Image (cartoon, rainbow, N blue to C red):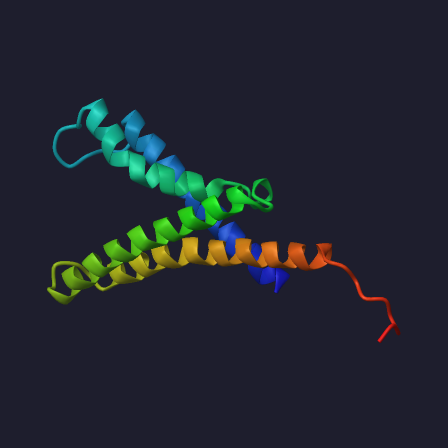
Length: 142
């Protein structure tokens, strides 16, 4: 189970690194656009949501051991999954209408699965840490 949690976390880190890197490259003007290059303000405004999505995925779980910070990160993961789910539903209707290829739906579902699985790993680590803190029964005391 620990290896699965590490795999999920590594995939989340790679996805976050990809999102942050590509949005920084887009803001810097390194990604070509089909028409004219948009203004810097327009590039920043369009790149801000994926940058924040990636930045949240890059946050180390050890910074959120318990308390309110843990619940803020869990709620943020759920918010990201909700936004990605909404966009995946929009993609489903576009695929159904024939405007997009079916592969786009797989990418949308992956965008939902990554924050949800990272939230599950964070919650599991919290429950394991909580079990190790509690009182231990004395053997043979029953």
